[in-house]
Amino acid sequence: QVQLVESGGGLVQAGGSLRLSCVASENIVSINVPAWYRQAPGKQRELVAVITSGGSTNYADSVKGRFTISRDNARNTVYLQMNSLKPDDTGVYYCNANVVSTRWGQRNYWGKGTLVTVSS
Image 1: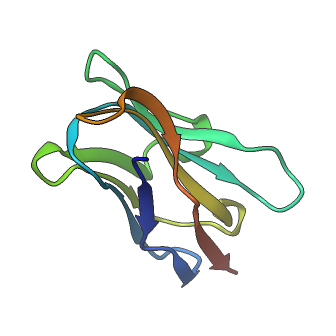
Image 2: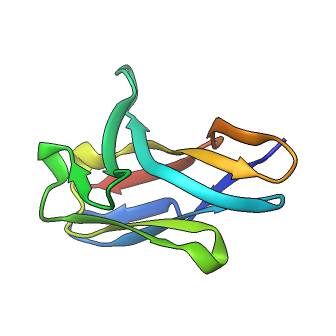
């Protein structure tokens, strides 16, 4: 199966920055509608940022102006640049995408998540 592997999480002070990466393994043809979700302790998973099929980007209101989602098709990688981090940004961040691979066709995949902790 295709794997989405996130990295870049960690502990950061409020006001700091982190850049998350999500790399797709296997023989990838394309990555479609890549997105980042997060799940804070005791809360439901929520959409943070997405690149739509048309190429535009959408963000949760809580992160607009602070987070930027981007992609590098040559590296099969999706990024989430997070600036001006707040304690409320703490949570496990998950990558999600519709991935087309040579072996499995198009399927939707989730990564296992990377933990972001923002201290006050």
